[in-house]
Amino acid sequence: MVLGMPKPIFGENSRICNTYRRVSAQSLQFTRFLVVGGVTLLINSLLLAFWTDVVAIYYLISAALATEGATVCGFCLTEFWVFAGRRSRRGRGRRFVMFLLMNNAVLILRSPLIYTLTTSLGLHYLISNALSIVVLTLIRYLLADTLIWKQARLAEIGLDAPTPDMRDLSGQEPSGN
Image 1 (spheres, rainbow, N blue to C red):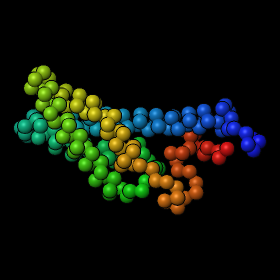
Image 2: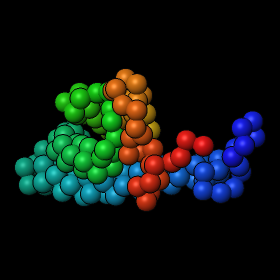
Image 3: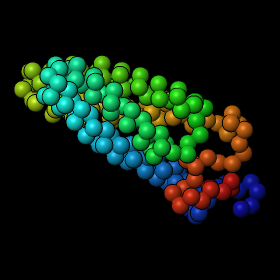
Image 4: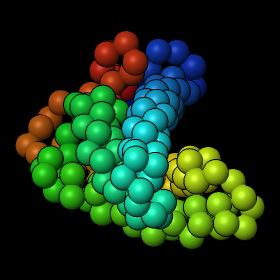
């Protein structure tokens, strides 16, 4: 590329290709978040059914207990698969506490929804729970991506090389052109 010339629109190091790489990486990350959500929804539902049907605890209290159990599993999968390799300015313990607080805050929003769907619409409590989780998934992803696993600036962690999130899906680092 000649000095003073604008960056090419097409080609391996173009704006379009670099934008595509970022969007592809974010899409993959969101897809992984949804898969983890499906796994934790199953765990949450199993725990909810156990606490409600086997132990005979009121379903809204059972939902809180199920959320705590599913949160531990969800954090591990999110930490080691969804945001694996992301360099964060926060330590793992702090991210776990933030993830736990996020899920408990979302539970405060979910509980009235579960109650309304179950008592007013007559849906089974497990269906109400699943619907409440699905409805709030996007909010949870946005909080996880922008707050809990917020990527550190390279200068803050003393690196000059790009982090794995800055690489395209093939693992190649984007060129500085």
